[in-house]
Amino acid sequence: MRPVRTGPRGPAVAVRRRTVRGRPVLRRATRHRLAADVALLVAAVAFAIPLAWLVLASLDPHATLRVGLPAPPTLDNFSAVLTDEITFTPMLNSLLICGGATLLTVVCAALAGYPLSRYRSRFSRPYLLTVLFATCLPITAVMVPVYGLFVRVDLIDTRYGTALFMAAAQLPFAIWLMKNFMDGVPKALEEAAWTDGASWWQTLRRIILPLMGPGCGVVAIYTFIMMWGNFFVPFMLLLSPDRLPASVSIFTFFGNYGAVAFGELAAFSILYSTPVILLYILVSRRLGGGFALGGAVKG
Amino acid sequence: MNRHPLRWSPLAPATVLLLLFLAGPIGYCGYLAFTDTQLTGQQSASFVGLANFRHAFADPAFRNAVVLTLVFTVVSSLLGQNTLGLALAGLMRRASRPVRTLTGAVVITAWVLPEIVAGFLLYTFFERRGTLNALLAWLHLPTQDWLFTLPILAVSFANVWRGTAFSMLVYSAALSEIPQEVAESAAVDGAGGLRRLWHITLPMIRRSIGTNLMLNTLQTLSVFGLIWAITRGGPGNRSQTLPVFMYDQAFLKSLIGYGTAVALLLLVVGALFSAVYLRLLREDT
Image (tube, rainbow over all chains, first blue to last red; front, side, top):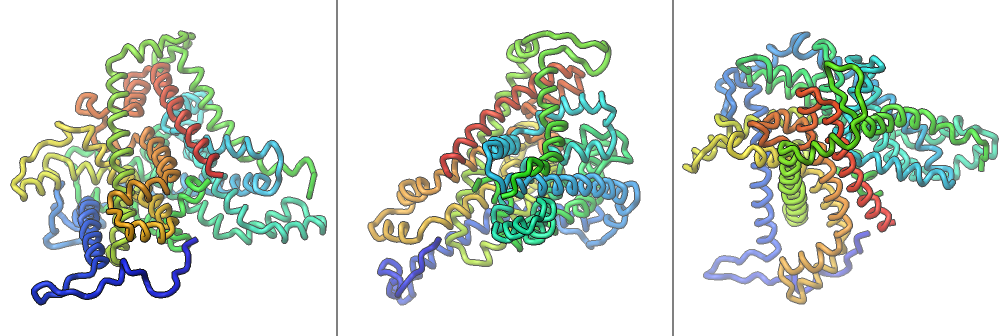
């Protein structure tokens, strides 16, 4: 906790206003703030250049690879990509795969989080440590055997198979987050319910879940964002063009059309990125920026 | 408390899913890596012992991938994301509010964008006809075809662009927990900025540094889409890190057994880092 400051600030800060050749010297704190402002603005511009390209190129009918002002800006690129084949089918696929997988992840994680958060036994700690260990494994490395398994059990090139794997891959982190959120819900209410003879299912559904609605929302949105942006899993497990989600279809767009229409590609990128940016804003408002770190870093 | 034996049953769905789709493939990975399975051609694979691993360590392409993975990890995660994230977090504590909000928004947007969009954006940035060269020409500096001359550095910078927000958020949280008095009294005692950083700030956030480095490294070890979108591992194999090499061997060259052996090595390295990370966390509690 930050200590409460009492009284006026110390002598190091209370610098009297002096002048050099009649001009007031800036206070030290002000000078530091200006230096920090300038340094941060430089960094912000450096980070913003590729983003600026994205926005400007999407409005530019003659977009090239470099940043340039569109003259005149039009929405032609957007109307050109808003077709079934380019935008609606891949976005619908993304929604089906990621939405289904998110639902599965959140339900499984909420169920699993309950006993892990509520019961003490020699079983729960190893389970949690295994889960935490799994959150760190490089999932990329598992994709070759997953492909092999999916070919054998005939799940390859199915959207539900892809969703099942995505759910499993995201589940460890979701369980960990969910358990931490549940730890924050006080136990007293449930104990009352238990004495009245309620089962775990009634307690979970009637008492815990309503209390941790925001927590579940955060887990769901975070899971969805991670899946929406995932490229490698659907790239490996799906083959038919009409089943590909936007993360992969954008790539075939880029790779296969001889002369790439950069403006259209930028427009599609914006359409594809908008949902996750909006969802991120929704969550970060509620939990202040580093929501994703609550589970991972603080333990 | 409710002692019913069924009280653990809510764990079942998650456990089944994890066993079938995560533990299963990892186990299968351990098996495939010791066989000569191929994507096409022969139907029955036979057990070849350590041959895949011996082949890997003797294979110049594999060693090239290991070196590139090291370069990619050190440049983008240790030096880039970690240091830049700390610098941004430190500067933000001094900067004025609008600048802080603006910089935070831009850096975090780069992080939230889907991987393939980020890759595509940085492709246009580094491409011969792209923005970087346009800027350099405008400043009368020499231009070059970055994706041809320095592909691994280009993808490393791409990863810095995309991943710095995470470190920035971790360090913002860590720095905000340092009591203000400590820094102020050191300043009164006449300690300069660098000495304060080295002797006070860094020791006080060392746990965050440890966990952040660990998570950044693990994240960077498994980057595939970003590199695939920018260079596809090329030109030649000059930006082919281990995940790209694994994909290339297993699918483009159809050597599933060999590709899986590479994947297993990647998993083992990841598992070692995860174990260290768990130790760090345990010391915390």
